[in-house]
Amino acid sequence: MSDVPSGSTVFLVPGSQSLMRDPDSQVVVITGASRGLGAAIARTFGREGARVVVNYYQSPDRAEAVAADIGDRALPVQADVRDPDAVQAMIDTATDHFGAPVTTAVHNALIDYQFDAENRETADTIDWEDYQTQVEGSVKGALHLLQACLPEMRAAGEGRFVGISSNLVQAPAVPYHDYTTGKAALLGFTRNMAGELGAEGITVNLVSGGLLDETDASAASSDAVFDAIRQNTPRGTVTTPEEVADAVLFFASPWARAVTGQNLIVDGGLVMQ
Image (tube, rainbow, N blue to C red; front, side, top):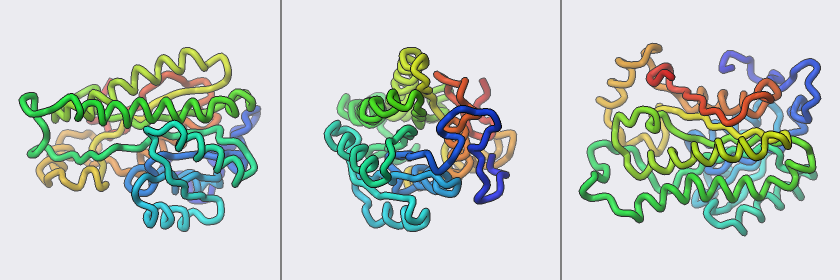
């Protein structure tokens, strides 16, 4: 989908009865959208005409810059995904602002993490609190976001929830213990919710990227790590945030209306399943 020209209506599917066939009908919330992958996802949806909630936690200036790139269809909103009241307030604010419910939710927020292979916590040094931080960001945040959106998704008769995971769950080349465990738990969350909500027209999927070139989270990774990825990936490149964002767009579109409970790995073929 990265070859689709800017401004094209990639959501348009002839014969689809989905409300999402018209990009202007979509109100999309992306958590952690002020930078990195989240910002790329927000801009991708904005490019296609969706109305976009640019969620942020601690970076208002960056969130406002992303929203400015999108234009008047974007709304920056602060919320900590670990706080259910804050998440509900964000969804209510979006509904009031756009005059339409949030029926597409992308959980991308990452809590205080850097991919630094040389200075990571090891089996001897990691604490349970490290695990708890990542599980809360990955699963607790996903739960709060989905639950806040469920009433309106049900009222609409459809919804799209997309979580962001990692190819490290399938192949932990670097043992980022806490981060990978949180993302593995998110996979279980995704499949359980997909199983329960599918009959209501709500799909729940994951997109799993590799180490991305380059985000704040990956900035601490050495050149040697990036070189190793290039050498061992069929495409010979490191995946970009924009390439992962295109896969998220697919799951939100009518083209994926029969796809749920899936984990799509977008890493140039480094991990094959």
